[in-house]
Length: 541
Ligand SMILES: *[C@@H]1O[C@H](CO)[C@@H](O)[C@H](O)[C@H]1NC(C)=O
View 1 (cartoon, protein in one colour):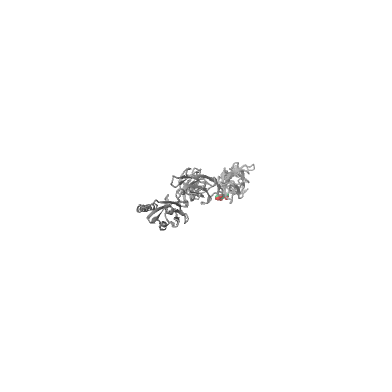
View 2 (spheres, rainbow, N blue to C red):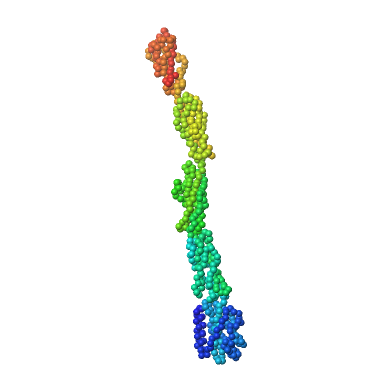
């Protein structure tokens, strides 16, 4: 539009010159600053055109065509042309380096036209300005020192020296300003990075760019620049502890939360989002017993924790961010398993001497008893005793090693078998106990002689019985067993009765008394003899 206006004015001028060429006179030039007060005298036409009072009275002063306002008027007494409207150079001649207002002074007798050209001088009445009040610039924290970022240029409605001459940046740690000005072109500026950025330290840098014009005094306009420092994955996650220690009781329920890992990452967005995982390479694969929530960091009991199998776990863990490439950190979790009294004592009987002879002496060792408990501490502390009353006792040899000893007289004929109950109890809470029964047999010793039912046995025999008849069968009782109770019989020869061996005989095995002759009642009515029973024990009784 500025160019159009300029050309319009030019045509008007040419037309005017053409019409009045024969009588045109030298043109007058005046100069005045814009924005002067109304009434300010621009020049005196009476003087400059050498006009008479009569000519002044009939003179017509008008603006060349194209102007909306009549900026000037004339004092017809003095011939002074003065300002009668506000003159704003920027409104009249935007973007023009030189601004003229053309006035025509038309005289009637003789008819002639005088062109008056008023040069409107710029004053510094406009400050530089930016099209926006504030801008945002995104700069990566990985940017190198010396990197440049162009800035918007400032505009100024004024021209020449009153236009934008330079820029200033507020004092700051990170950026300097590089100003480019090429002759009449308005100056422009670039931000130059002077120091490495660190989003984690300063995520936003507020700058103020000031554009200053060359007027006297100068005017200035500002632009707020918000530098968003863009994150780069330059920080690794950091665990809250280099080593986590935690205790867990054995047999802890599945689902028990052991602990929550916590790692932080100074970066933002995915660069700061952490994923937890177990690190491979541990002696035990923790996956079998624990699970790890990769997002929350919770370590949860998943399998059976058995103190007797593992008293502690060393789990290696990793925290990794989602940046690309990702960064990671490592830590260790020491899980100490606390024993629970979940194992009863065990009783082991060895070297059992059964049967034991009934004449075994007091303190004879019958068996070795070993008690064990897989638990620890009080849970594994065992007390061992015999329940019930039996002629045996436990003697502690060393810690949990005992001897089962004879503690009283044994008598097979009275008790031939013992069930010896042993009870082992730990000191856990609640306590657990185990019972074991040792079946012990008592073997016979030939400690009882055979006994006849009576000390005197009467046998009645008819006279004249056939020789070789069993007249009686002897029986004995022996409380010993087997050979020790098996009797053999014999007739005891006595000096009183030397004939007896020809009269009867006793079968040594069966005890049968057999006559070797027949008897005659009239000759012999009674006779006596002694028999002896002997058992087969060693030694015999
Ligand atoms: C010993 O225990 C066994 C098995 O319970 C039983 O059959 C037997 O009768 C018991 N013996 C004694 C002498 O109590």
